[in-house]
Amino acid sequence: MGITLVDENAISHLIENFRDDLNVELVQKFGVVSVCFILSYFLIKHIWSSAKMEKEPIRVLVTGAAGQIGYALVPLIARGQMLGPDQPVILHLLDIELAYEALNGVKMELIDAAFPLLKDVLATTDAMEACEGVNIAIMLAGFPRKEGMERIDVMSKNVLVVANPANTNALILKEFAPSIPEKNITCLTMLDHNRALSQIAEKLDVHVTDVKNVIIWGNHSSTLFPDISHATVSTSTDADKPVRELVADDHWFNKEFITTVQQRGAAIIKARKLSSAMSAASAACDHIRNWGTWVSMGVYSDGSYGVQRGLIYSFPVTCENGEWSIVQGLKIDEFSRTKMDATEKELIEEKELAYSCLY
Ligand code: LMR
Image (cartoon, rainbow, N blue to C red; front, side, top):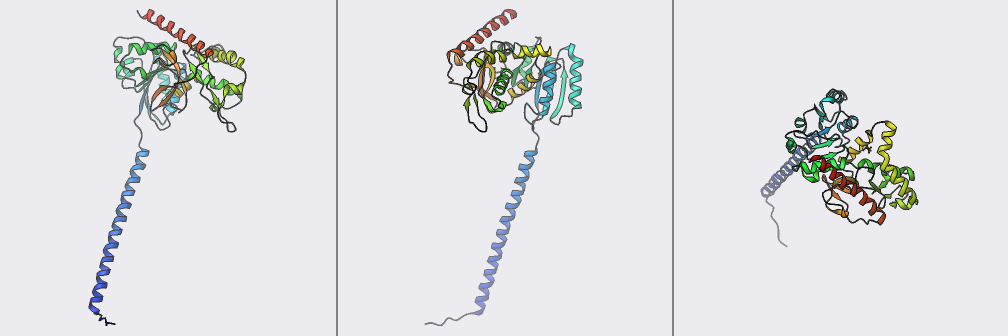
């Protein structure tokens, strides 16, 4: 066994070194933690301020804005019903000279309502001024044709045509405003879609949001075909049951239901002595807003389901990233085929009539 000689100086030197190392390590760790803390603080601050940062306003043109639908629609847009509760908007309101005073009244009311999302309102009778820089155009009234209409290309990433005959008006717009991509021109059949949903919900005593996959085929007119072949109802107790099975009354579907949806516009005119406005305005918001489910939309036909190419025909569509696509691969029975062909025939005739008026 050997004897170990302990040098006191060496030990204290060792302890000193150990302390120094420990201090350096502690300082280093503290430094790293502090840097992480500061970085996290700035990161959280940045995320928080970007979340709170206001989006750029979207410019929405409404033509015929002094009319009944316009009066019902503009407050919905200003409230965020169309583009979302955090999307600021600038409204461009256009109407004819005769309606200018009324249009100014609508502008005054919009200002008085102090909508937080409404950043500005332009009320004008000048189509060029109204179109300048707009992102979405909702045509409640047709444009009066004016010299220099090709300036339409400075506007409109998306155009929704509501004015009747909606499909053929949209078709004419598509053919005569080639600078707007045809995919960006659509017409409103969401009004008929909502009517069909409501009729079914009433019949089955379920909520309207429980009914899905109804389709409006064709023209926004009395030949439109409200198709329930693919429609389902899911309630809290039952998941996805076919509507046809639940109603179990084909006679009701093939007669009463179809006629009610087809004639609803006329029934409202008869009752109100005025055309539908509130429901049309609400449907226009539903059309622009993506609800993540099947909707019906008048879009140009790419030949899907044998519909003549180029016609603006109402199809079932899904929307993703602001783009619609026609739902493909649905089985079409003989009854549906006949109805789809009849409404297509009407659209072909309307197109011919429209062209004969233009030339
Ligand atoms: C509607 O469907 O309520 C409107 O298009 C008015 C009409 O002519 O039916």
